[in-house]
Image (cartoon, rainbow, N blue to C red; front, side, top):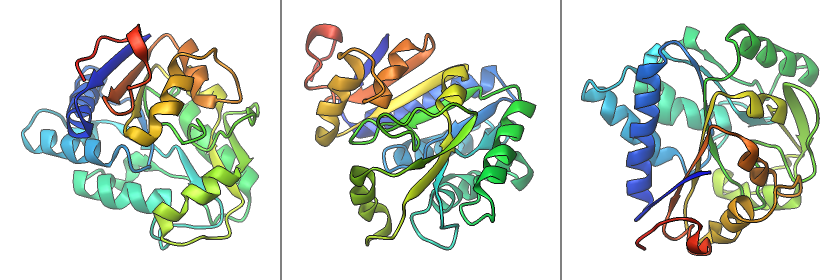
Length: 248
């Protein structure tokens, strides 16, 4: 596994942005998929800074959303589409015809899954996938022991994810389901960059990178991907022992 540890979250984010920019420069026109959690926000800022310096053209890529809370849309602050639009798509100047997102307010969840799956197929799969790791190891909305077959899937939200959602919305919303690209799509991605940051993620980082892969810890299944790269800060890496070289 390719595991890289950085002093702090800022250094992790700066290096993640450089990694992404270099990949985009080498693979223009590829389909990119970014997670919309808190961990990547600084990376987005660093990417936009690199673009302002002429080091990457973020509009050279196409974009598809990773997931969405079913039942809400852009008007709900904290929704995936709101976060991605306001922190990345708009400030980066990405043309709307290069973006395809899940509509959490669509009439049919089955049709919505197929709409996004068709877009991914049309682009030959995801070229670059940026993931965070949830407190219970979920990736996208693939929850523990919820590995449904399919390019895009709907998943009942775990109690842990519902509780953590308060940090995005500022209050508890009645959300029961997530819509997400499926593990079949994730494992077919050509390159995956996984960001794990913060003291609170140390235990799940250990389960992700040291323990045997299992569906109970979805992020641990990424050990099997030959082109997955893991970026951690020192706080998240504190339980990894000697599997990485770090000066923390």
